[in-house]
Length: 167
Image (tube, rainbow, N blue to C red; front, side):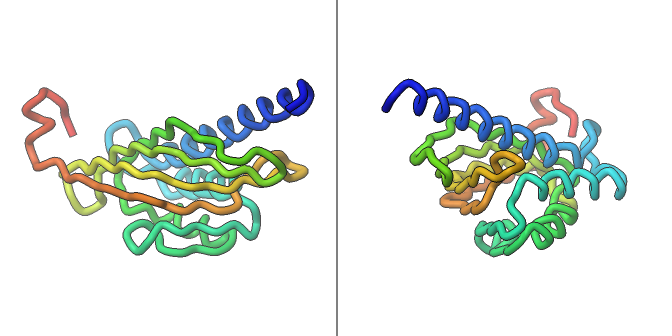
């Protein structure tokens, strides 16, 4: 690998990492800090922002528990607009870049804390995603997201309150 190629690869890694941070920022913008969903206009704008992080022909494969199989930016936006949570916060960590080029593959670890719309019991999610990114004229965008693992743990009612935390 020559120095110029190394520089471009490093630049691509930074830009993809920033894209993922922007996606998470939009995902979290759908909720207020008092653990409720944002108003419909703000939620729709955040869902549009999330979907804009994907190519027009992107695909999403999360299994039946988390959106199923979705095709295209429009389907993604509709899914993002109707979250199953009244509150959620996303942490994407430990990116493992498997291929770096015009099409780049990255494995991410997702740690998510959320409150379902229909429950006061928090849910802790842990997932591994395999994601393909493509370089476009607008920069890097998600092209394919696949949940490789998805584990969830409901925290029984009162457990966090016993630590002095309010839900």
